Length: 163
Image 1 (cartoon, rainbow, N blue to C red):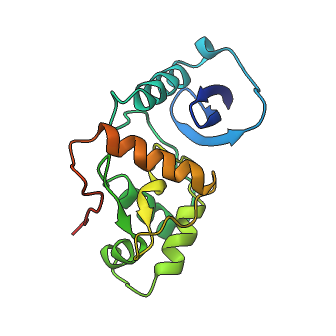
Image 2 (cartoon, rainbow, N blue to C red):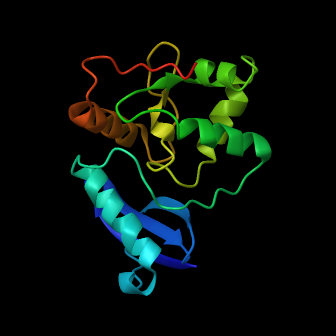
Image 3 (spheres, rainbow, N blue to C red):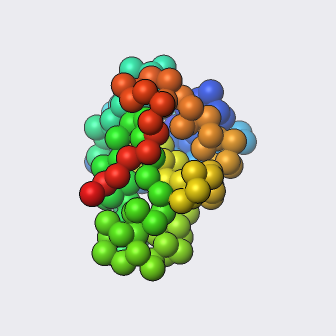
């Protein structure tokens, strides 16, 4: 595993991965830099994050290494389907997964997401439109949603249904 840090508009992000896949993105307080040239996939992820933050990238192409339970992986796969600039509620997401009573389990899986931004857990909101639960802090979730709204093709409509 190698690591590189990307200095984003919402804080320093540590990217962890191998030659084959990205395994985590975490907000960190201090740089723990390795040479970006050593792992081409880390360099690609770094560039894709830069494009995302400047508004020119709406989806990511890097290979991901998602570690979790089958249920968590199902949740994360559904998160990848939420378009840039759109949101879905925890209830809508639990219905898509076949159990509308699984809202807490969906929220827990969201919280265990090791690759935020790329696996866009920030696009999941409360049924009342509130911003709830984001490991990077609610202020970052709000920033990400406003950023995406600014660069998306969707006018005023942030809500999205996966059905």
